[in-house]
Image (tube, rainbow, N blue to C red; front, side, top):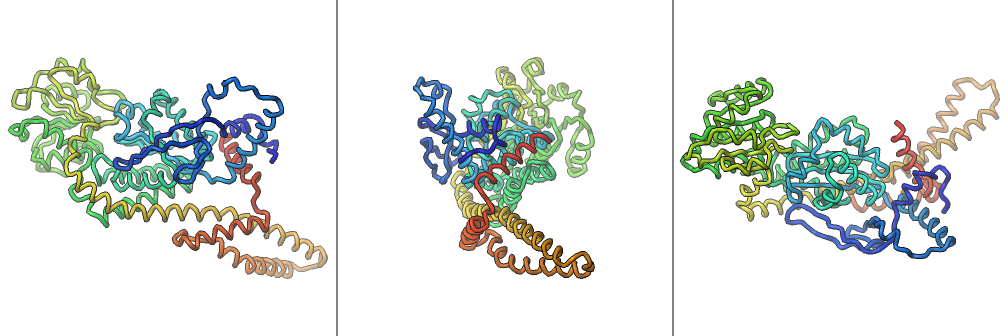
Length: 543
């Protein structure tokens, strides 16, 4: 099959480089805890999901020294072009998640890759400007950094996004690949549903992650690149998260990251000093407010809160009138730290608030609280440098250390997770069916356009035969007649192309009807689909 000249040059080179041949490679795919699996993939074979896996040939492969004649090289190039076009047209775009979470990646790597919420729209735009990415979303929290994309090519899409992450964060690609997990299509869908339901959280069933998934949709509204597939995926994930919490008792007794931080601090304090330890909370945002609430729930009646402005602290003080909450500005942070036994940090600062030089001269705490000042840092990026742990008068704990709190009640957590998995499995099938049903939309549009062209051509012939003295009323009557005939003829085919995705049998028949109409009316050719996708990417890049 010849490739049209519209795809020559760099764009064709990009397409051609997407298809490689070579030796075997091993790709590690990670799911949530308890669902970790690694697939050994032979290049050119199908993986367990029935998707062709692509692995880039290394420079060593390309310079292996094999002798290739000009004629065989030309033949190989033609095959390359054909296979590139074939892959783009025979396989629909894939949903891919490139993720790093608390289960696979230490906090010192996650904090470098974290993307502040305010930067999500720009990140979506940057990612969608990559050659093989159509849609994107960013989910960046203290426990995870996950990028969801709709990719024209799985391998090239993953490669481009990983390189973008490296360029933005300064973390080498090799380091990202060491910790990342990759999930495709059904696995990616199920993963996000599990995330939204709280099954992938460090604390099973915690509710904050559902709010964070909702925030992805809120931030993505109106952002170019947060398209129909990705927005539909995240909206469905919100539904799943709500349903799991409603129909199971997974949230019963569940704790958040903030409450786990409070629990950890109390575990590290001598029991006799838990009620009298001097508490300092730095940051009065969502996480800081939750820390304050959980401290109050544990019996704390007095604390100091350091924040950039007093407004948020005043609002918290209004909610908890029986508790003495003392506000201090950020400029007095070190003075407040000198008078505290336990310090919680939860700010959005991208640089550490406490380093060794800030802590080394702080006055020692009393033996009643263990002789060491506790820093419980639940921020990502971290607010307290790891170097502080080197001091003999301080102990630092971050979000990765919260695992100690949530190890309890493992059996109960697993039982609740199994109840939720049944719901997630059902919802995953519904989402995939909905996504499958979207395949008929282009055919519906093309069939209408095809018939409309015929109608207009025949209407023009009719009007020319009727002469110039035809009244506007007659012209309108003939036009309405032609539209009515077309609509009645199209009613049957259109009904058989529409499907809500809830019935797998109906969906299967719908897709068969779509392929039949495409063949009968030549509505779709390999080149036209390829051309549309490439043209869309070119137009997007030129904006």
